[in-house]
Image 1 (cartoon, one colour):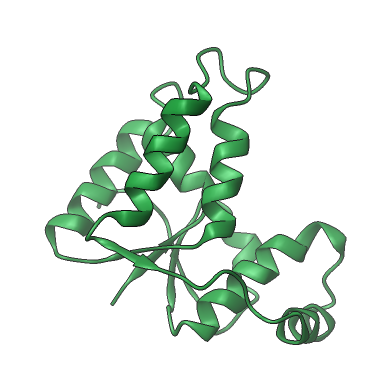
Image 2 (cartoon, one colour):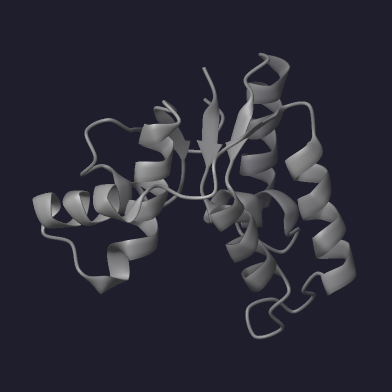
Length: 145
């Protein structure tokens, strides 16, 4: 059963200055050791590129060339379950209507709908409240325990 990663988990995994860096590394090492494929979608990888290279967010952001190489490596890794580009807009808008979600929830809803379409039911994120409304997802806290 694959484990999808939200952007915040990728950030904490690869940015050594991120507060949960060690916890996320230990958690994902444990998942990978168990043979769990990591589900990644283009949307999450693009957002990772945007955040990880931003000097306003990190004292030592990733240089763009390094970030691009990392994303390419992640996408092509044998442990990666490649998700489709995005869920159809009709499914995203249906979920948004059903759960009374506003504009700040568009990308989260699109990710949830993409996971639903790919039959991925587990998502590692630090933003539990953003995803627990979707009954088809099991939200996983990225900590070892």
